[in-house]
Structure formats: C-alpha cells, structure tokens
Image (tube, rainbow, N blue to C red):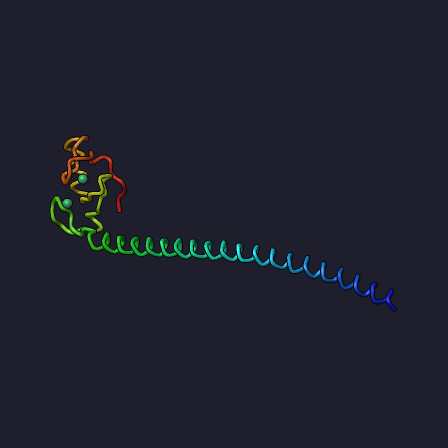
Length: 130
Ligand SMILES: [Zn+2]
Ligand SMILES: [Zn+2]
C-alpha cells in the first residue's frame, strides 16, 4: 500500500514538474504573441499613415489638375485669338503656349526667336502641336 502511495506521489511530482514546464512555455508563447501583436499594431499604424499620405497626395494631385485645367488659356496670348483647328496651340518647353500661326511667323522671322511670354526658351523648342 505504501509502495503504491509512493509511486503515486512520484507520479504527481512528475506531473507537477510537467505542469510547471508547460505553464512556463505558455508564458513564453504569450509573451512572444504580445510582441508580435505590438509589431503588427505598429505595422498597421504605418500602413494607415502611408495610406493617408497617398490619399492626401492624390487629393493634391486632383486639385492641381483642376487648377491647371482652369488656367489653361483658350486664347493665344500673342494675337489674343481663340485657338481653333486652323489656329492650333503650340506648347513651348517653358510651358507657355501660342498659336501655330504666330509660332510659324516667329520661327520664319528668326529661327532663334524666344518665347514672347518669358523669353526663356527658343520657340523652335516646342513640345507638341494639338
Ligand atoms: Zn496667336
Ligand atoms: Zn515662355
């Protein structure tokens, strides 16, 4: 009988040790999880602020585009005529525009004619015709 009791006691001790080890492991896992949780939280915040930044940039971009469209001149600043299919707009690299007729006239007059608006760019440096 006493033998059985000893045996049980020792079994119980082993179980207690095992239990202690398990709860130790559990605490470690829990600690790791909480660290991972914090990292995840930080990453989430970073992602959120990045998304907000992107959204803000998109809004600014939209605003700039709107302003650009508003400021887009419909008249040639040299002859003050509206652009038409005959009188197409020519964009210079300095971002100024003038009509094709005057662009032609200026280039024929002097191939190194400067932009009549800012004089910062030769009119032959035109970006496109449309
Ligand atoms: Zn013109
Ligand atoms: Zn210019």
